Length: 117
Image (cartoon, rainbow, N blue to C red; front, side):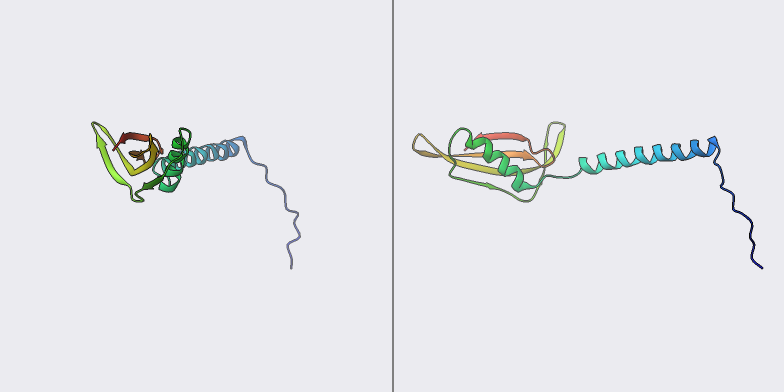
């Protein structure tokens, strides 16, 4: 009534292991490419960018106020195209209020342009 045959353990051939390792390597490479593409297109938080810029300004002295636009804007100069955040920092220098405005890259957080208003 019941089949009482002993089950034998199947041994895999070298060709089977080669296919399995090839598939694992291919999956790893595809995962790395997907992750790098995703990370490249991910923008930084505008508040985090403002915080790092304020940290740099605080090295030279106290600041009075700061702001940043939370929406990124497309920006192009010559052949370089990216999305940017506009913002500003104000502080007192020689008893007068001085304002600085900046343009920061939305993907790297680096300051593209900084000018005194």
